[in-house]
Image 1 (cartoon, each protein chain N blue to C red):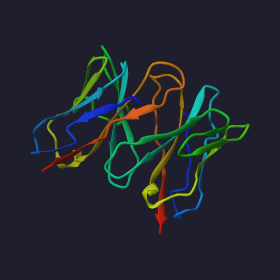
Image 2 (cartoon, helix red, strand yellow):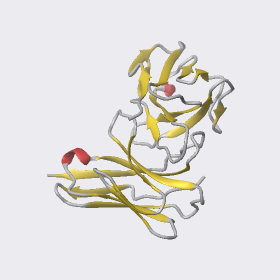
Image 3 (cartoon, rainbow over the protein chains, first blue to last red):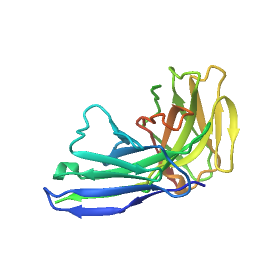
Image 4 (spheres, rainbow over the protein chains, first blue to last red):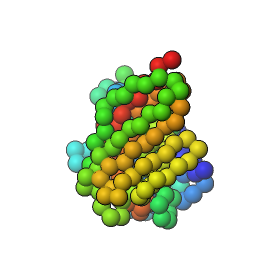
Amino acid sequence: GAVVSQHPSWVICKSGTSVKIECRSLDFQATTMFWYRQFPKQSLMLMATSNEGSKATYEQGVEKDKFLINHASLTLSTLTVTSAHPEDSSFYICSARRQGVNTEAFFGQGTRLTVV
Amino acid sequence: LAKTTQPISMDSYEGQEVNITCSHNNIATNDYITWYQQFPSQGPRFIIQGYKTKVTNEVASLFIPADRKSSTLSLPRVSLSDTAVYYCLVATDSSASKIIFGSGTRLSIRP
């Protein structure tokens, strides 16, 4: 089946620095990818929709200048957490769906970000 | 976007059949129903998807009544490894369609 891969699986960074998370669709092209954030014991919260070749669409309450999304190719989207603070520590997950009818979403394995 | 409602948690025992029901009263004509499983510190994993009636695969069955306002995920003969959070999602079949997660059901399986 289709695979969506994230890198890194975990990262620890100092407060004030920026961190980039990559999301790749390994065996299909994805014009649209989605980024989620998940806090402990909570559900996944959609942050933004990443569109290949155009600007991302952010959900209400998500700071676009803090969470920079780039979707430069049909197989890669990146999420950069800029000037990270401890409250940004979370589990970040990306998702993509194949083109076509009745296709399920595939999720990456997630990236655990810890800001110290 | 259709909102889903599921029980927050459920408990069962190994070898039992577990049924998790999800309500989606505002489901639209173009919406499909998909169930995902998530283990701690992992991304959600696809279980099953359906539009109406019954769908069965090697791990689960999905029952959808005619009005499609609810659906039931059935897990036959659960094991300890089925302990996870299960999400019922409703979305259109477009690859650009947003997928919004509800609260999910935390299923605990005991020996």
